[in-house]
Amino acid sequence: MGTVNAGAAMSPDGFVADPSGEVGPLFDWYFNGDVEFPTGGGRWVFKTSEASALHLREIWNSAGALVVGRGEFDKTRAWGGLHPLGVPMFVLTHRPPAEWPFPETPESKEAPFTFVTDGIESAIAQARAVAGDKVVGINPGSIAGQALDAGLLDEVWVELVPVLLGDGIRFFGDVAKPPVLFDDPRVIEGNAVTHLIYRIRRDA
Image: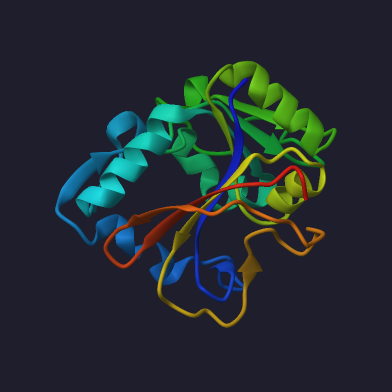
């Protein structure tokens, strides 16, 4: 089985979005370089520093499935039917939509979305079964906190951006139960972003 990782761009004061859910300058590093990086389906093309492009390539090549919350699914309108990672998606929700709720696109006809109503453990188990030896990614916020509390996270990938938001949505939401110890990070320096990859310590 592959690892289960939570990842997000984050401000030094610990927020992955402002109180309304907008990421603002946290995503500027996706477009501040000259190395092109096309995403799944080729619908988006990032332009980053060489170091960040290599980091993104590692993420894309290792991704096997993604677990997200219903709020993110609705806000992005299901990423137009295909997430940039181009992998199967497991959407944690109390009430799945009765039918595909967004305008039909060529991607959404075979949209790889599964709605999970019986908790984070089930969502991750289903995602791991599909991902095999590849990584299961967890979106930030409350579901990342739930996965951490359940002991299901292996790694945390932080894209640290030099901007203070002051308030907003925390990486692990408001449900995580600290303290949790990490090993020393692997550090990759990009333009206006520092990529930090932490293993979670199991002996803590």
